[in-house]
Image 1 (tube, rainbow, N blue to C red):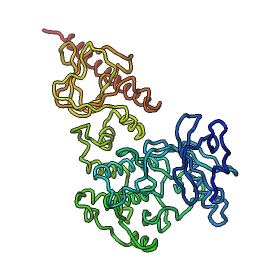
Image 2 (cartoon, one colour):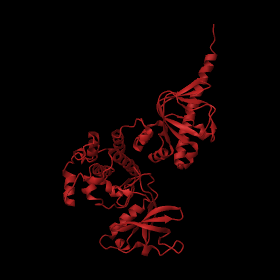
Image 3 (cartoon, rainbow, N blue to C red):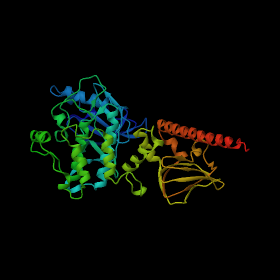
Length: 448
């Protein structure tokens, strides 16, 4: 295959290096049958990116060119459509006679392929958290009308401990598109029964494929293995997989059940929603009750926030933003979270326990799980003087967000904070008016 750099652009006189369009090539990351991926620099946005350039002869191939073009256009059409912290962002796409390439978010990490081998398996809690984040990301994609159709370890990137990014949406099915979709795409070992039969697909096909990945990360082997694609497909349709615990004793029965339900051949017996799957994964991780926030996986923290009324209007994407901004604090009973007269710039949301609000020592109110306090530090001005004290009535867990960090959140995330604060202020004003009216009624009572 010819080097796409030769077709896309010449050398850059200013950088002294090669370029594809405006993107300055740093190094090659890998090659496939139809494309090559480069690490590059975007001088306009001042960021590193990954550029997937298609070999010119692949698109011009008489036998497969139309298919390759369709897959390229499918992935390119998602530029700017899927914005999720666990999906590789597509920034730009160019389809020209001289060059066809897609510009994506650069992820400094590796695929999950190496962790799907028996000699390099990840600890069980990390596997559960990775699958949880994949489930949340694919749920988001499904809500946007996108079914991936090619979920496998090679298409899931891992950076750090458990920061994952799903990539390669070239085989994706866009349910909102009127264009004819290519069938028979995907990797046979990870296909669902309905996919190998070329039946109509829903998001449940991705649940099945993620179940195969889950099984492989747990055991280092595929649930449906064979000497060729035909024998693998036969097993996918006809053979029930052996529980993962048979090959890895530490896998609990609960996790066996999750995996086998994901791999149900009958869609009616498979998970009906991504949310149901995510809930079971959190329970397998130890539930969403907060005991030691520092040791609590992100999946548990996310699920905790998702259940709070304060965050009802927040999308999953915005909740992941909140997790990046928030600090989780476990505090004992009687601890002072806010002292009257102090200067502060943080607001808090109660995750567990109760707190009491006092002014000049007098009890004003008791706040329960999901309620917010200290919000005037954000709504008023930074370094706001506290007008009351807030004390822990029991052992509590709160999340703290500093007002000065909130501008780093997206505009929509800030909008939902403002909406939640407005609801809170209206509720408190209504409660204050009710108390005032009762006091006035009591003062007007005549004594005979």
